[in-house]
Image 1 (cartoon, rainbow, N blue to C red):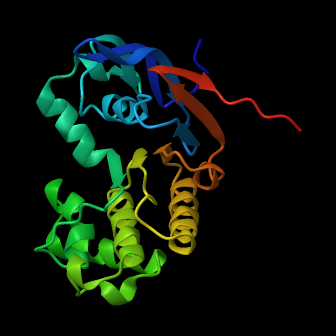
Image 2 (image 1 turned 30 degrees about the horizontal axis):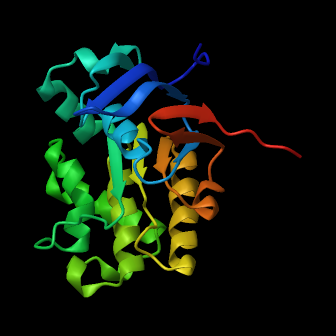
Image 3 (image 1 turned 60 degrees about the horizontal axis):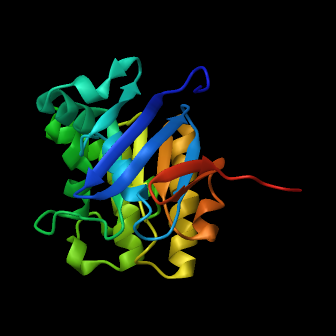
Amino acid sequence: MTPAGSLLIADELRKSYGPTPALDGVTFSIHPGEVVAVMGPSGSGKSTLLHCLAGIVSPDSGTITYQGRVLTDMPDAERSALRRGEFGFVFQFGQLVPELTCLENVALPLRLTGVRRKDAERAAREWLERLEVADVGAKRPGEVSGGQGQRVAVARSLAGSPRVIFADEPTGALDSFNGERVMELLTEAARSTSAAVVLVTHEARVAAYSDREVIMRDGKAREAEFTV
């Protein structure tokens, strides 16, 4: 049974690559404003779960429901529209567009949904300032540090006012100081906008920023148990 008021719900997801099950009956849910860390060793299925929840990969069976809509029944075009307009993404290496300035990268999700350039860039400047990288707006990704680039990527993920942010090892390429600051800024900003965050990580220090943890192992998921 999934909790009432869930924003995104997955029920009995199964996904295999050849004979190897990546997801083996996974059930998952997340509320608005909640940060959930999905933890587990390499090959446990955590990134596959994130990709299914985001509509990037289709499960072999099971259902994913987003705001009462069955994501797994949507055509590709509708899922793509969701990813542009209601989902935000932060990846391990940022995946910023190298030909664009940092400001243009942050404005890009808004531009793709039809927002005028002037309005998109104004919102982008506000997010760059909020993420403490307002001074790199005119630079291209190759001209900034890894920590700055990842903050730009976080700003991009938030610029379109997403309901869900999918963060896949967002601090994996950063040193501990920059990793901690990126997580502080990401979770503070997400909670302030009531965005849910699905955070894939194998690091306990990163998972500590979440409200709860889901442990993946051999394609199965369970809630982490905490003792006082």
